[in-house]
Image 1 (cartoon, rainbow, N blue to C red):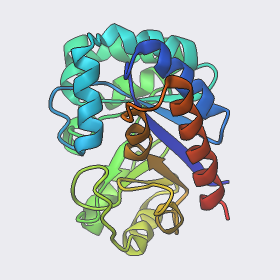
Image 2 (image 1 turned 120 degrees about the vertical axis):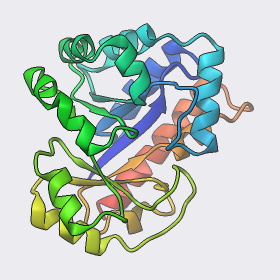
Image 3 (image 1 turned 180 degrees about the vertical axis):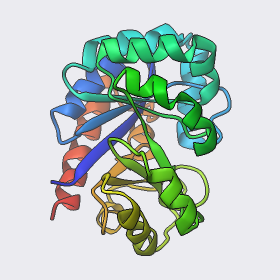
Length: 246
């Protein structure tokens, strides 16, 4: 069964909604929830997720909020934290990973930490049984791919194109997926630009897809109430899960 990972911005539009949405998605085809930590400079994210980040911060998001959200969802649906390194570093990596483990968070996705720097925290991650998700890009050489994925855990995040999330670009990923397969047996999940229109193409050769901007785009629609937003996101999740498993 191909996997579906759903990104949501923590605390947008409010903390209780994030909990309700995450649990609903977990009941409608989503295998893992990627809880985004709002940050003022989300360099890998496009304008949709960036806007949700800013609004969440303006509404008073605190790092403690992601702990409270995780407390309520991580034992019910597989949960990862996606965030930029600064908030994690400010919290303290040792304490952060202890908290992640205590809450049942299975992994961290940190897009602005190069593999070479991430290795400095390898022991901490393993001590706490939390995966540090490896990133591979279409521009990576076979040699670099082998290095990056050699100790990968949970899944490998294959960036579908060079750029930011949500831009909808398309690249042939079969060659790079082949290079990953030669170097690792860890599942490969494709992210960036995945939605209902592109999911069937993006899943080719991969084990799962990561969907973010498509869900956040629904949440940004001011004409929808909370129930409608959750209903639309759940409908999208069911459809994508069906498409990637046809």
